[in-house]
Image (cartoon, rainbow, N blue to C red):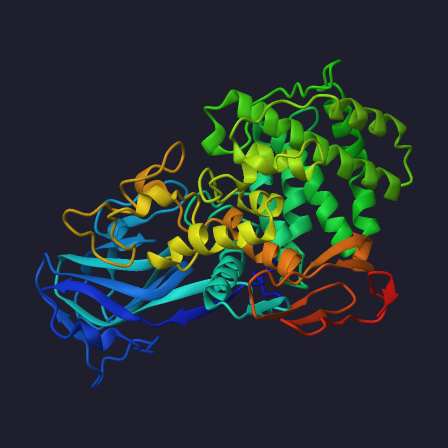
Length: 528
């Protein structure tokens, strides 16, 4: 039932208390905000922070990245003007945060004896400056907005660092599941079709409520009439097909796939005209693979060739499921296989060529494995590496973000950034690099850089697929491959959600693997 016949928000709102006072000026006993549960203004016999001087400020830490805003409760008997700043790092709230896509730096008027809520962004830290008036602050809390979903998918192993990587990756994608699946909760807060694929693949290993996937896929489809490419990127229309394939294989939802028939067939006609006589991709529109390859035309071409082949193979399987004749599609696949461009040392391109079966680029993938990575292409580079190499990358590349204070994974990252750098949860230190403000390129320069980006969630999916060893062979997870690999771990265990119920896996070095699957799911040819 709704009171206004409007749209009901299925997300929950949770008030989160301050976990730490990072620093303050002109504020006596600011620590009384830590752990304060008050959500209602009380003007009788309730202690409050007296902040009577303009120029006073507080910098507060809510413990980990959140999506939402803040609730500020004022007991004062006069209106007070403040400056409010949100930050994903301490550096961000101590400077001038970027205002793209959501407001991170604003002035507010606080009411007399009341509460004010503000904010719709991603943040962990908040700075409050008194600009005018005498602030009598009873409390400030974060208002976290999220979908209350059970983590049906679970992973645990003998390496606590890998456990933290899995937990952080899962939390990263969960925060980006809002009214649609966002790329980032601070920026851009948009539905980007290519960004969506690592998010979709991670969500499939975590949750049973997957309703945001078709909602997001349909939203971008409906905004992109053919023959246009999604967001102007030909590659992102390819990713729409790959997302349809990944979702169909997991869900087995033929009714939903059937609704995509006309658009899929029309899009494949467009792509049929994007293959040269020699088999090379001739994609038009913006030629985008990944930001770090933006200035590498050869690497971009090599990667797009692999991506197009991988996607056309997936499309041919969708056509079979729809009962369509796939002859023309198979001819396009055969033609694409004839052209094998050199990828140089470009790891994303090498990974996509390997995953599509176009070429063996193991030498590229295994050479200096922690260099040349990006968080967007991270899932694909991990999948294209040997498992022992991928674990090294998880511990070193992804783990470095954790070492420097990350509670979610970032839009991009390079290991060279951490040399003589401050942690993101500390005040910037003189003589040290500012890990947030001093680095980044392209669309993620300095404080514009998003520190909670859904495309960086790929490690969670990789650990499920390559350590627990589960991957889908038939639509609806009715048949699953099981190829576990402990690599150097002593044990690993977890659950993998399917539409028929979770699969449970337990691995221990020196002992037989244990797997339990729900009725109707076949594991390696044996009805479980």
